[in-house]
Image 1 (tube, rainbow, N blue to C red):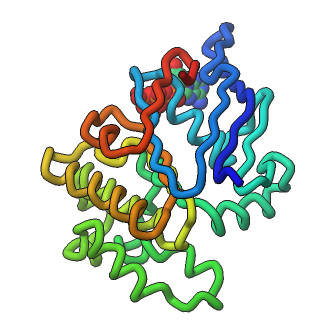
Image 2: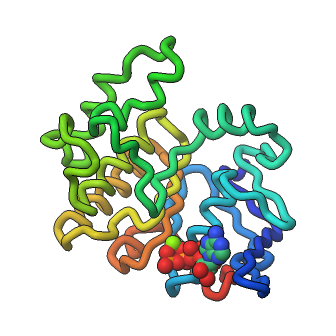
Image 3: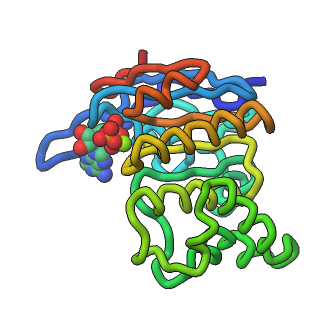
Length: 221
Ligand SMILES: Nc1ncnc2c1ncn2[C@@H]1O[C@H](COP(=O)(O)OP(=O)(O)OP(=O)(O)O)[C@@H](O)[C@H]1O
Ligand SMILES: [Mg+2]
């Protein structure tokens, strides 16, 4: 079964009195264990597509199937549970909570369901994997852009997702740090079978993916 299947997905936005399609009739199948990159010009619709796949946006038309489940058939609460069980999403914008330490940001999902434990060991392990252990007691306002990206990635992985959506995971990183994150994604993909769908302008990262698809003007090709 495909891990991610999108069929004829369209999403319009309005700007002033004008409406335009940020995603136009996009279809895509990602199999379990694949590493796929979305590349293309700024404004091409990559983040919008990832938000649709994560169920954070509703499309005008089309389907998103995750493990065969049409996510738009789920109610809000069901979708939240489903998303937490299947996907991690490191968004392009910073989604960390500024009142919590880095460590608590990474293990945030554990605060909502105590039967999982406190997430401490797992969070420390992930911070180590993304090279951010030294930042565990800092707060997001004290971090650089690249450090925020590393921490966001650790948080996206805390639930042991089988799918990782990563939007510009190497943005704001120097070349060496970008290579480290690209290697980490590749390693997770190969070692654990994590399915990775990443949007990027980073050619080195896209070269590590099994497939790179271009998205321009809302059209995926
Ligand atoms: N909430 C919104 N309301 C209106 N227009 C939006 C909204 N979000 C995005 N857009 C527009 O939709 C288009 C696609 O944006 P999107 O963020 O998906 O592109 P992108 O490919 O991720 O770009 P980048 O590479 O710069 O991250 C752009 O023209 C953008 O300005
Ligand atoms: Mg984007």
